[in-house]
Image (cartoon, rainbow, N blue to C red; front, side, top):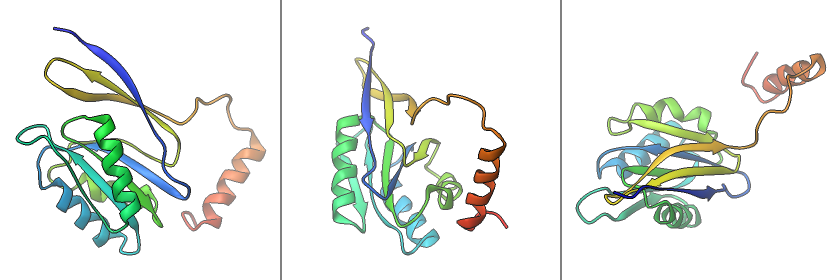
Length: 162
């Protein structure tokens, strides 16, 4: 049995975020769609789910044609069964991650970010799967007092802390 490790790059369009996860059933597409619109109704998004059995199709949905097409194309490039990818605009993953985790089919979230992502994929004789992600860049040092003050102010300025 041969085992190959590959890397696929994901980059969210400007002013967008992406969420990459793992799920296990064809109704994932509709359930994720409902979870997003019921949690953040003004969000624009496209999502794709890679089937791991049956027809092994990439299933897509969304309310933004460009983001839906992008999600489908990137999921086809990833070619990992039982994985899903969401491109999200006018909302932050922070507002959705707990809701997405509560969708019965969702078993894992690999990342939720606006950073460039490198998805590490294992390719075997049976299929392909996500083994991990590199989300953004590596940290270079510990924040100083000025940077701590900036972080605290920033979180309050955008309304996430009081």
